[in-house]
Image (cartoon, rainbow, N blue to C red; front, side, top):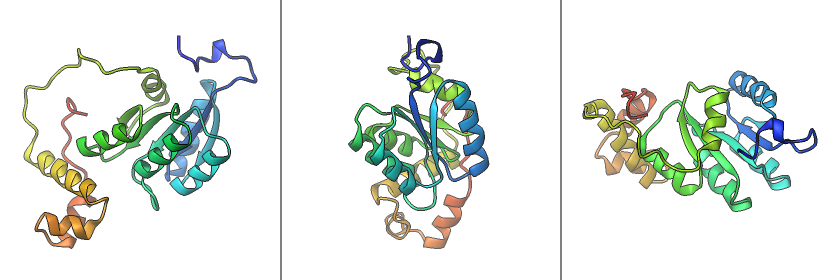
Length: 192
């Protein structure tokens, strides 16, 4: 039994959920959906604002967009776990990469989901207590474009998100790197 099932909570015991995304339409729609699932929802459209809210009242659950203006979702994950280690955090991203997924989990995120995502997938991610050894393994290698994307993301992570330092490390012009980062990676659905 999960600890955020609305049927097991009285009206004054709704679990607290902090939603953080800079897409206001998505944020508002997700807030409505999560309230219907029994959560007491607070929203923020920037990591800095979310951290201020969390300092006053650390949430039991959080859904954090990875890429926002200002601080990234990874910074916010670290901040939230420093306030309350038990907060269950799901990272959402439109630019899924293995490197950022690993960093999110290392920093304390419970799960990492690629957009588009619905409220039921997020609730299921909160419930997940451990990995799934039965997950289907792909026999296909990653496409070259995806491998390049993963390598860039790993080097970017090693350089703390610094584009100039990453471009130097990759022996690439900064504008070329920015162009590559602006494109979505080729997606292999069995990986994400």
